[in-house]
Image (cartoon, rainbow, N blue to C red):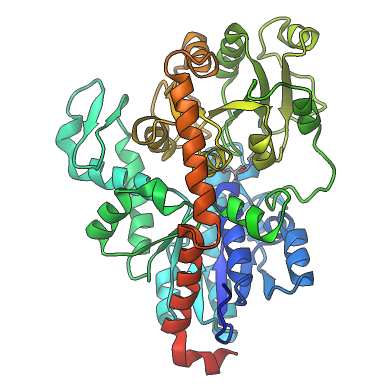
Length: 485
Ligand code: UDP
């Protein structure tokens, strides 16, 4: 159903990391498809990741634009073009990219003062956005790229320090709608890191998440009671895009040629391949990569393994972290494919030959796996991913838990301990061999996919929420329309 009122002018500001940018650009496209005027504010290199898609949407009648602000590379001492955490390989570079989000405040604010929008929807990382919205006297909603379940976990952990006095786990998290246990103690630094972000939600007209209401059942109420803020579930955004705007990949693919990994997957039996990826940021140590290779080889299952290591590309044969003869053995048996570089993840997860996803539990990876009905083998890498693992394995029971060896706050920290190949082998086998509860997990993952698909159809919870969001924005903007249009 399309909103009939006069379009309002909405500015969206995605943060400079794939896990933030992809879902917020998807949201921008969805809102624009409801006849609203949307402008995405970003920097040159980040714009390149999605500008073809926006051009395509414009050509098909959407009111969507990109406004470019110069990335403060010289001021930060960063090489030209390094504007996204995906391009960082250490904490120092990453913190400069985070700093850029703050340095850009005056420029973005000046642009907004000259061309005031009716509504501002920044990523939660732009913690200064509340004051800008106040100065301009415009309503602001924040986009939170993690899950509401995670925010509930963060709050419950903060309010119950007594649950963490012991030196060793498991730690039982009180108060939440489900009994949740954490095998390792969360770093107090993580709570400190998230505090300004949660703070940034205050004074907003609500929080938009890349999820669907059914996935957060129990937790939305918990969150809304705790904070008094409304949650808008407008996701999974990649699934909404796929079912409404296009039938191809998410924004970061942009290519019309079939990726070689999809051609390889075409040769495989249904549900026979494990897809392995640790997202766009995690750079695993050589020791951990070795354990992974040994674990997947010992499981005897087929695999498609994507390795993102900064500086490596697909033609690079420098793989001294692999067990001796691994590549040759895999090639001989046509058992596995190893890829370095960007792959079209939603298309891979949708491929019928994928039977399991060995994942770091990034929030987008998690909702994408759910959208495709692929059960997960969880191995969190840092931050909120330890909590996403719990939503998968303990709340919805759509994955097998491998777990982590230690708590880490950053994808760039070298971990001192590794997850052993035996744990990885066990996790893969228990899902893929069907014993150890694998068949029930697979069935529940298919049921959850059904719920996700229902949510994004006309009349489903996420579609209704998108319509309600646009109607709500129209209603709060009201008389301002004449000023800005
Ligand atoms: N992604 C992709 N191809 C890759 C790596 C990542 O399409 O080779 C996408 C993935 O589908 C997801 C996003 O990048 O939408 C990564 O976000 P997530 O929250 O899963 O993890 P992060 O990279 O932030 O750790």
